Image (cartoon, rainbow, N blue to C red; front, side, top):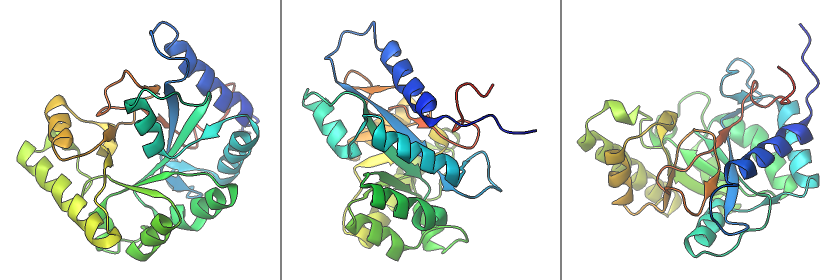
Length: 246
């Protein structure tokens, strides 16, 4: 079966238009919201549920560069929301989860060339074990030196609602310490593994000095939202296609 033609302008513009529609009934400033994209793997076709094909990713970048979007660092977006400062229209943030090796080999060169900021969420145990298919600490430090924001995705990437709250605290603290040891800075942003959490987990995260936390549910991040349960649009081989592909 042949693939339907991929039309990135239709896809990305559709996401942003849909996001604006969601907020149409919400009293808010004209530009106090942003759309946050989430990627995992790049050009790793054996993992289609978390992978984006390189032709898809390059089309996304082309649309972002030419479609009138404003890509800002995630910390800047969050700071503007906290301070009730307006964001540019069509603001986007790019995030990448799990620190797979293809981030360094495929995404980082393309994003750097395009001058697009992004945030990388790291599960520290996989990096510490030098697990096959993951980045190294040297590579993560290189990204940080190049302006990439480094956030946490816990130590062992557990499904947080399934473990005791004391273990959640250990996961958070162990990851934060490893990131501080290896990058010289404790993380202030966190992505929940598998995008799932509960109110008690949110309270623990907030109590550990995090500025914001992110799930994997689709929706708009806006100033009036819960900053410890912010949404992101997950992009993979299926959800990276045109909205008209059926």
